Length: 551
Image (cartoon, rainbow, N blue to C red; front, side, top):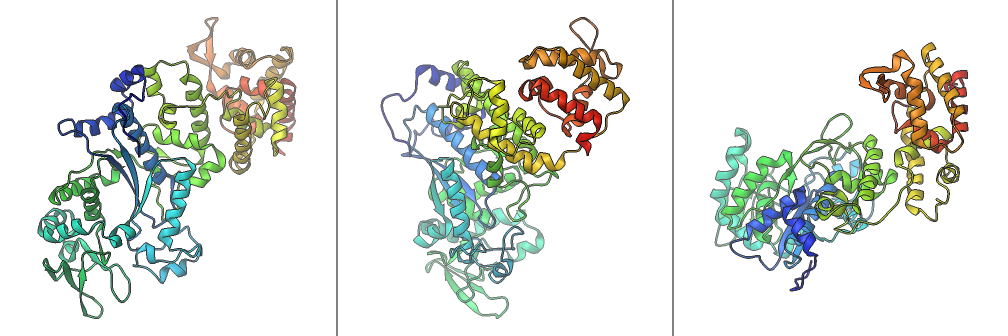
């Protein structure tokens, strides 16, 4: 939680730029400022994120915490850090296990406990904890790894400790009003048996979805019947003896805790509206927030914890630094984005591009730069002489399996640059080798050049031989363009060359990548040749012409 202070925490230039910033975290933070412009701020402003631990944590879960943290920081700047705040990461670990996730071991063990609260289901990874507690621990470990400032909350703990008791009694008291909101949203068959209360069966421990036969307001209990045995039970609504259906539960939590801000996926727009109405019935005020677009797997399907499709947190971090993942979360939150391995290289290079631009910008542009939001207003100063995409191409051309091989090329390309002087580049070199081994190398497919392409490659080789040793990427790129301009197949008459002739089609560079590197695309080929070396590139062309690369 941030502390309140009379002294300004930020410079006047920063505060002025923040007041005008169009960056989406500031736009969101202004909603909270407006929320209290007439009444004044409470003792603390509460931000919340929710997590359902029915499956392994995925990147979408992390994204919600990362984005909410960005809004929280923007709010702290807008209020000059004078309003205490807290981020509560809430886990619905009292939810019943509805199905066995596809991506966990010991699935038979879980089947034996279907229907029970996740906090009572054994961990299939045999950690000795419950499935809910183990997944909570996995999420906390990851959030800690990123250095998030948050407080973790367990639904089971909050229900059982009595934190929700007063608001649960309100749900009991205003049951008919809650039902009037929920029933129109349900199918006819479901509405006949629906109840916002889900009693925990005192004998089986299962979370029961059953009609409520009687409500006893004075006793604070509900009466329901086991559909299999016909036995009736009277269950207190307090003390963790039952929980609420997830939509009323969400609303109850907003009212009970006084949540000021919570974002949700686009698929929950209607649920947010219902929750807001129920929150008002319970005497609360619905939080501010917005609906972000969903993450999709490589097939365009929504990623799911139980399916395990898309990327896991650990998978992304096996191939790229954490900051690249944070950047991916920051960019265009209201646009659906594919979340698969092939988005990683671009995210890495974009992060370092934004980082290199930051110190040259004024405050207005700094606040629009994602790295300001990623690093809570204090981005590091990092120089990166070689982009990640070029490192991937270097790994591809050299078939490097050791960093020392990569550094041999890098040190020649950038004298004085070493693993010791540029530890961030050294870290990226390791990521590049791993990514190449797992994704690029298995998919490499060299093709034989046709006659026109052979002549083009021979012309490229002749041009490279004319260049002096140590030519930079721009000189080499221009030499390659000169070759392409003289070949009719690669002339693009919609473009103009510096001399007024036709420009160069992208198909020329696509051919170079397909024939020489066995892949469809890459960064500027001139930059690659400068890094890999002219002599080495000439040898690569000779191998392509002789058929060695396809062997």
